[in-house]
Amino acid sequence: MVVCTRISDIPTISQSALTIGSFDGIHIGHLEILKKVILLSSRNKSKSVIITFDPHPKTVLRPDLFEERYLITTLEKKIDIFVAHKIDYLLIYVYVVIIVLLFVLLVWYNEKIFVMVN
Image 1: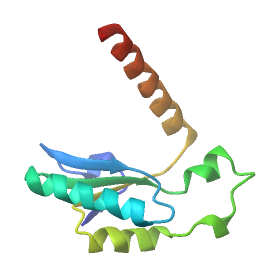
Image 2: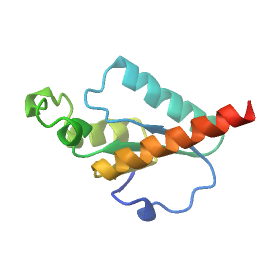
Image 3: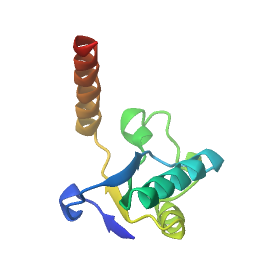
Image 4: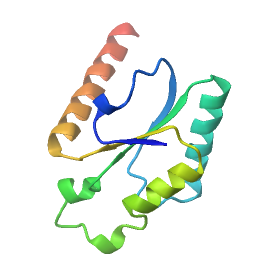
């Protein structure tokens, strides 16, 4: 598995199966997502990609409510689990408020397009 901390570190990929999440406690639901990503990338002969965050989003959005003890799965353990599931690429984003704002803007923009088209 290739671990990247900048999107520019990932080589050009023509096709991928991708999921995004904090994966703060990898449980049965998360494992099903990983299996689905692997299945889709295998079917499509594409690369499997996971985007996750470090530090945990709550440390940025609600530091008053966040405690280290709530982190069930450390970043190192997440990497081990992704390697075990044969994920091709892992992108670890440094979670900062600007990323959140850009994501919200993107979602809002896409919803407006969806409304206009329908």
